[in-house]
Image: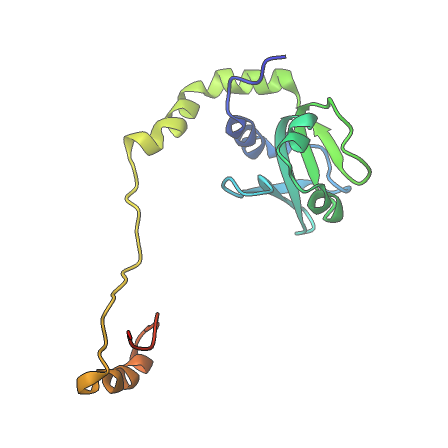
Length: 167
């Protein structure tokens, strides 16, 4: 079987936008979905009792194993794996929820324009990266520079990278 032509991110967006279609998790309704921005687990489901449950989204169960995700985190925290097809048993303690493939296809077709815009947004409007300002200053032991450093260090964020002399 050939792999999916869409990125898994589309499936994650589907879950985020359709939380009301998810079944009860541990007997509770999903009231919020938090996107973990490409970190494991993909999503955090907030239930109606305010508890948080990890959720990993995959095209198929076998992808969860192939990606090397830690099953223990999902099992230990009563989490779930949301899939379009259950093609593998993930073991005791790991609940798989099969998403409705027909509903997913309809949602993609209905939202294709906004999904394409979300996908190309970073290309159209790149966000400049912000880097911290770092200052490197040589402090000589001659002339009292090290004493001045000692006096000024408590007033700002100063990190001494190397001490000692060349020799």
